[in-house]
Length: 578
Ligand code: DHE
Image 1 (cartoon, rainbow, N blue to C red):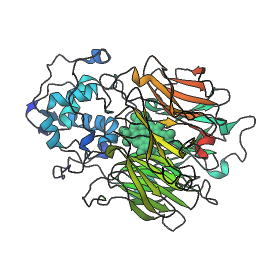
Image 2: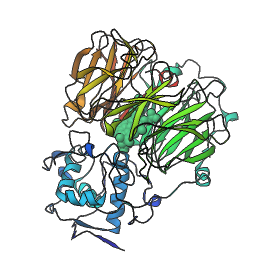
Image 3: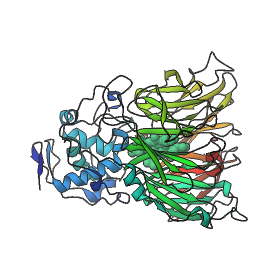
């Protein structure tokens, strides 16, 4: 056993992670620490760093886990077992925002130099209590014990370990075809409005629930494994593709009774995005997975998930800086041509993959803005609008001409999800983003044909009661835009919903929707008459609202409803309705 010294030993018991999701096999994924890593963080998003440490007072959520050892500000020594445990916690909870190699992106860089300068007390405090700029209070919300926070505070002061690559042969070895195409139903289930099914992610249960959008009843539970992040529909809607933080892709067939897993494969060790082939003639034929680690995209057969190709996306940044980590963030599928369009987070390029070509190569890399994250199409399906959230900007890509049209500032930490398209009474077609770091809905012009003078400029800055928003949502038939705030520092703000009125350009109403957890992410039913919202808590709920009156229709409950997050209606997801 080796011991990793910074200064003083941490007298920490290895705490069991009672609130952690089903474990992913992280230790197998990493090699020894890369002591020789370039720790330069000149381009890392410093501006996302919290200004001051929050109060480190212990809280009720972690009371059971309180260790009598007085917290120390001295740097730490971690035993090999502690290091392995901290590495797993980091991977499960922190890598998404701060990067596998800790070079920063949505969250600031956590390089050893910067972390040692911050000191153990500061680090323990911010890990425990969070910040009002989007950093969750992990101990405050009960998702980490104090011991785990202490371990992490030490871990981030040490050099990050180097994770392995994942070549096509390894991906192929993970592929499991449970039901060949010939063994599947040839017609949809009789008497089921399957195109109004919802796939609901039960994040920490490692499951996806399929619900009937007409009756609100549970249809079935699918064992998808660790922390599914999003679902996307195949173009016909028959299949859901689920992608998890462990890089596993699950193909769910909605035509079996009940819906079931047809195939699985693991293209990466860490992933957030998946998308199907949407161009005419390619419906349901191909699917692409965007990896966080390794830096690559993987193309699979859309009906079987048989791996077809893997391509690295590693390159220097648009600024010329060398990079060790480039993550594939949002992916959208064009209907104008057989391409996928993907934001390459750290490098700042938007890549275009032509899936009509042999080997599915990336045929264009458009310099846009660094730290690209989430986004979606404009109402025509020509422009890809993607948030560079650590740069406080939106970037607009013309996918037809394959060029950057504009970038513009919207506020601290824009996070639109897929965004919302609607016709504003003054500014023509617009889109909008709320923000993690400021209480503001920024409505921007997105109508270069009809209202060129307003296109790609913020036309309305609408104040919101708090920062901490992640998603906005609407439907073509709706008078409203729904806005959440799940990562607001104040727990009561994190349970709030606001509704913006398209007609008046102002907030119509805000209300507290739950008494526990965080209220997150919206999805409409197929008809656009109901909105589903998650109460993200171990005792979770789905609140269903009438979209016209904003009245509650029902609360879906059940002991299976553990930590519901994203919800995806089959029809709306297959048709990119947003
Ligand atoms: Fe997400 C979308 C990455 C945290 C729920 N999330 C996305 C996308 C990316 C991303 C790149 C766009 C995918 C696409 O369109 O192809 N998310 C990340 C992170 O890196 C981050 C910040 C930290 C992490 O460790 O993962 C992160 N995301 C979260 C959450 O904490 C959420 C609320 C709950 C969870 O599952 O962890 C969450 N992200 C979602 C959802 C979407 C999403 C529901 C899809 C929105 C949609 O309507 O399409």
